Length: 316
Image (cartoon, rainbow, N blue to C red):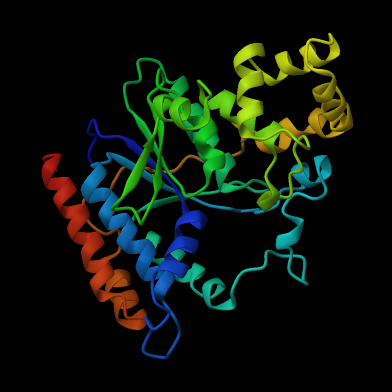
């Protein structure tokens, strides 16, 4: 490993391999007929990101728990519609079978993977961002790669934290900084985005929001009153319209607990990992075996070539 002044790249792994699964034809299969489209797509994404973003460090962040108990306790409807009959997440079986292969591939390549018991990948990312920002004298930018807008809440220009949002794969990334949040959502900061998301709600995550309060109204209230706490204080002081009073009072119980669900954790028990970008695979024999067994030769080659080129750029 070498130390270089490239960004710390944090991958929202499930978000990316789901995109790979649906974006790469399922005709891509291993010799035994098992689909490997998600594995191929995910590895190709890593190769592209290493080539384009020149990271010095990289962590594939993992969902150890896709529906944490503390969020369900706060809002029982959280992700409820995605529950399978066995209580797990409803995921296509062809994708479920590929996730262990992704884990093996990352280990063979020497790319760090991090999760935390009882927490989502969002919380792992939030925690790693918080740790990085807290370091004295830090100058390393942080780039979070995700297809999940929830993580826009981590954007912080002063701290050098931004989100890379795939528009069409990772070759076409929307760079989400505070200017983007201002122009697209009318909010000034990542924290304000989280407050807006709390008010707006998110049906895809089972979060009801405040009925009748959409993005524009939420952003307007936040511009006027500063924060979610400021908006709620204005409601209590009678400083919002009568109609808004009714809407907020009806959602008061939700608003009391929603921030716990919407805001990512910054103190999840994430173990320390060696996040330095490897110059070469950690286990070349395992890489070769996986490539042969799962028909991954082209994708593995692209990742290894990207890592080698990155090492050469850093003088490694």
